[in-house]
Image 1 (tube, rainbow, N blue to C red):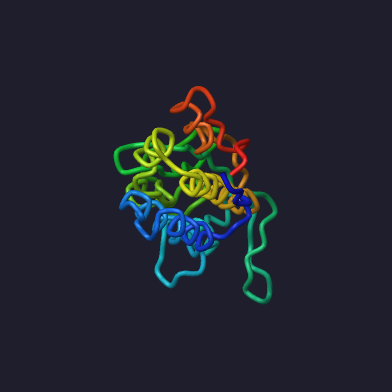
Image 2 (cartoon, rainbow, N blue to C red):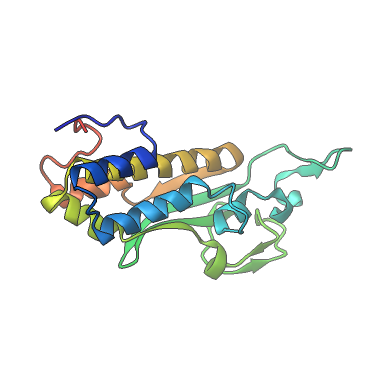
Length: 202
């Protein structure tokens, strides 16, 4: 198999997929690729998202973590608000879930105007799921059973892209825990043997 560097952009992986499949790209590949394309611009797209909402300090409870606005109106934080993350897999695909941490406790219910909550308002129904990669579970199984090098490269890209987004969160929040399998670990659980997508030369 020819080598595809993990640093390749999504469009290059997609182009390689089309090349080795003579332009016949399976629908399940397109669904995952489209979701990843959305993730590429999650902070730059005009529409709002739960992830973007999380990073907007206007939504933060300034009193909870000793934050204030300077003379230029910019928010300055003296300590990071605490959150917990969880990798979730279901019939829809892969999701990254977030939970605020209040006084050392992971909160899974709604909170409003709580002096200790990192956010002025926390609504799990609209804020807990930060983003989704559609059909990733089915695609991971497909990739192990009959996938090609472009499929594995797309899974790698998904793994690293999610990792980058978590790193961005860690720059603003104190992440006290990350539960569940990451995408590479999930693939390994499917494969059991020879399924380490991080060490394959693809």
